[in-house]
Image (cartoon, rainbow, N blue to C red; front, side, top):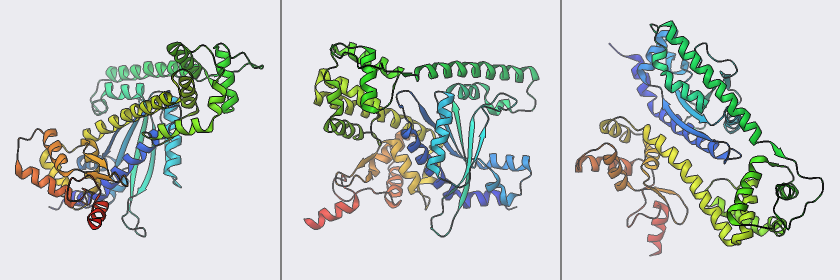
Length: 422
């Protein structure tokens, strides 16, 4: 007997993988655009294509026709974002809507109106076009769940798939709900703390003395340079920097922060690792550092801080990508050898950390040999020349840039151009 749903699922597998990769890329971009990155935290917890058997169960539960089961499943492509605080959840939702720039999406606020069992999160549902031809749309349903850390902790502790069992005792269900209420109260306390931390320090009406370091002086200079009041947390950070470096005067801070050359240098140093420029808070703290360390050392510190910040974001993304790898080496080979595997291979290569930029144009170049070695290590496969060759061949034939002949440092295009020059 023909399994119609399986046939439909396999037929659209390539499209679903493209949507998965696209969502992962979009969410990664949004994570890096959040303001106050030292205060606001959002992490991509996971992106997945809903499994065939899960869709089959959901279709049976809702009475969906087999032919429309995939498009009826609102979370066919699902993703989860975990934020520090509830405020971050709503801010991330706003930024995601701006990035998607879609005419239609649905926002379910299950924080203001939690489910009866205690589940809390914001869900954003939308349709994503992953058609390969501009005149042939192929839209798939996607859902992004955005939770606070404590809301995510409840979901982990309650084990959603166990909690949903019909035979769960009522008293145990009640305890899960109690846990949700306790964590929700903790979230409210965290929100109160956040509100206090984000309060602005009102600068004094009259210009204070700068021959000593005071919170009033720091607040006045920030407002004078950037045109808005500094938040309490920045003034506390600044006081820590002053104490650590032994700064005793703010006399030179205003001219330093007013120097367009200094600000451009700070911006360039930050952008050397991060896709966005520094915040006004970053620039202010860099100016303080320059008072004691000098411009060059302060700018170098900005570069190190940006590199560390990006490394943290990149490491989170790499862990998430590794967790989404196929379960076995055979499954990995099936994905790699599929005709439309380019997106998956690019994502796996990032997870394996086997991509480098072309020194001329910056194009990502995948090292096929290193990819094979990393994959075999990941799946604990003994030295097997046949598997290594299959992986390298799949990567090379996939369409990702694996460089040209030689040392493989250049992308294929510039390697060819270099050959012509010779």
